[in-house]
Length: 279
Ligand code: C2E
Ligand code: CA
Ligand code: CA
Ligand code: CA
Image (cartoon, rainbow, N blue to C red; front, side, top):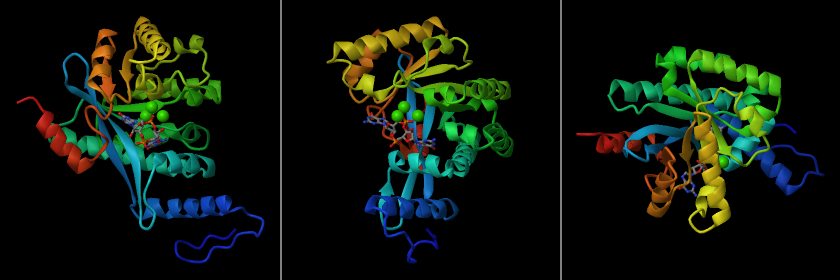
């Protein structure tokens, strides 16, 4: 198939399904989106369950498509991973987040760290270490202001390579957390060998933990396991005050979710940080 850009007829073979054509067109648009500045990062606060302070922000990619409107990262990130575009997109995300940390640091508004999601494909098909090094150097931020959220698939895809990468990243001084913890297939035995700082309890366990005793047990177990390994625990997808109270009673450290704020564009987050800052 030949791709000539947006609005121009694209050739596709007659056997292609509508779905496949749709994917191809979205992929072509995504390539342009990076160059044309249609992607941005939104930021969602992470709040300490004891002090109530904002201790972190997670950067989440957004794509404002000229005709499709807002395209969800749940749709375009997997696509970017399949076609390898995630290497460029991932570098863009690291670079933009680090620049924003610089801006907030200079304004005295930066929380302890900003978390950026990192795909296993950035490791297998790109030079993740170099990408992180560049973003840190260009922005001049302190490495411990940057946290990388990796998933269990990042760890399990190529074990030797990922262990080496994690050690190299730790040597740079960045922080690491395991995202969506409990949904993958990694062995618990590896957890103690991995030099990560934090576990993120997946949203699916948090969602109905106050009503579903099975999910509550999983959340409790993850918190106990993480703490016994000296890791910080953050719960994502916290929407209700009752969930926050329950998490605090379980000694969970940090929460993130719509209860505090949905992810906001950088300018709106600046106002939010001003309003939240201790007087
Ligand atoms: P994730 O890393 O697990 O991010 C959490 C998702 O939950 C985000 O969806 C966030 O907006 C949403 N969320 C936050 N609080 C709540 C809540 O209280 N309730 C509910 N129902 N949802 C909440 P989002 O922004 O649509 O991102 C989806 C996924 O796309 C992310 O899941 C992450 O895996 C991926 N992603 C986003 N940005 C990037 C990026 O820059 N790089 C990579 N590799 N992946 C990204
Ligand atoms: Ca994440
Ligand atoms: Ca997650
Ligand atoms: Ca997720």
